[in-house]
Image 1: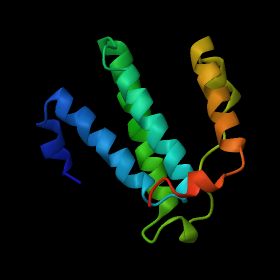
Image 2 (image 1 turned 90 degrees about the vertical axis):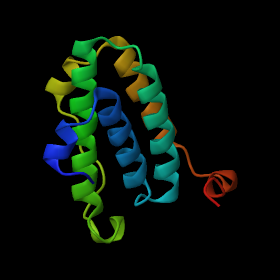
Image 3 (image 1 turned 60 degrees about the horizontal axis):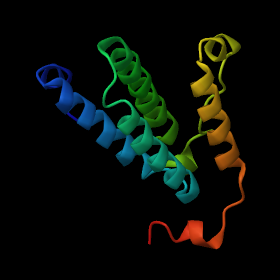
Length: 126
């Protein structure tokens, strides 16, 4: 990935694209079913925030940057098999700051990740 000084020289749009592509690349190290869910979620979230105002965009970029850093640490150099656990628990303080829409999205994500994997899911990346 680009160095810190060169990232600062990128336009806002270039930084957004870099973060988007970084998240998708990191998902390659996830188990297949988590990759499918993660890729879909990243695409949807980045599309939803195309018209966000400056304050929303800053919060969005910070949150996704933290996600990318956390996933980088959790996956490790050789993939998730060498990592302890994937994911992190949400704190009550974090949940209290979520909007109703964000809580609904979180619940949908929980439901999606709780479903058993079907044979069609396993063929997503063949």
